[in-house]
Length: 107
Length: 120
Image 1: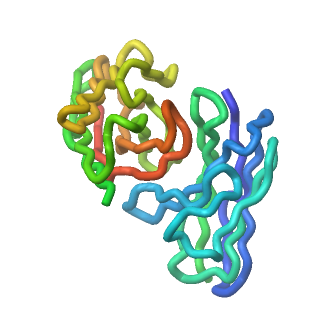
Image 2: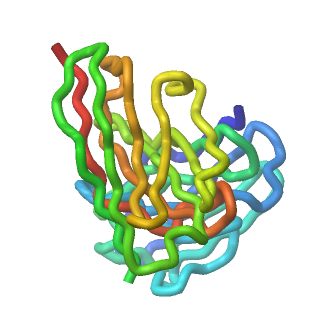
Image 3: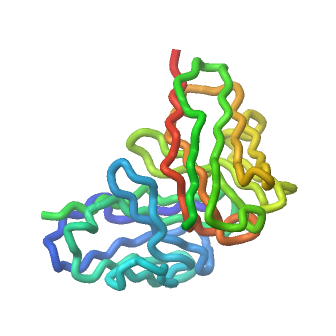
């Protein structure tokens, strides 16, 4: 099973600041890494697919990078609406797995 | 507009059974794999099961293999999860999720979820 380790677990950020969340895979997964945003009492929402591909309708301040074992989600110029928990997810091999999540709080 | 609406959750005793349903609309259902993903209270998502567009191929997480059965009815654009021998650690919100791939991949659409509580 591929283990995804996210860091940090929690981040408190001022609006307009840049946020960087990392996801490390226990073995190489190529670019089969996806990012989701989950707000309280909502289902997860796809933000980035295959490490860096943007999703229609997702604000351009969200971007992803990386390949192999190390991946990054970047939120440029954080807005209040971005308060949420962010998860990475790998689809390289079964069982599909998720990272433990990073909660982003707005100061 | 893609819509996924789950139903069938509820309170069930350990060892009991439950059948979840997911009604899909807004896309050609038979063209896409579908998955069930669950999320225990306060935890991250956990993949449960996947089924190909035709329904001919299925996959399960080890934690549910032998107890859960995924199926679909393409004529009704519906996805199902039959859950038997339920345990307390099966307590979670269960989401159906569409995949933009033949078997598994990124979950591009999720339902709102249905809560399953296993407790005596």
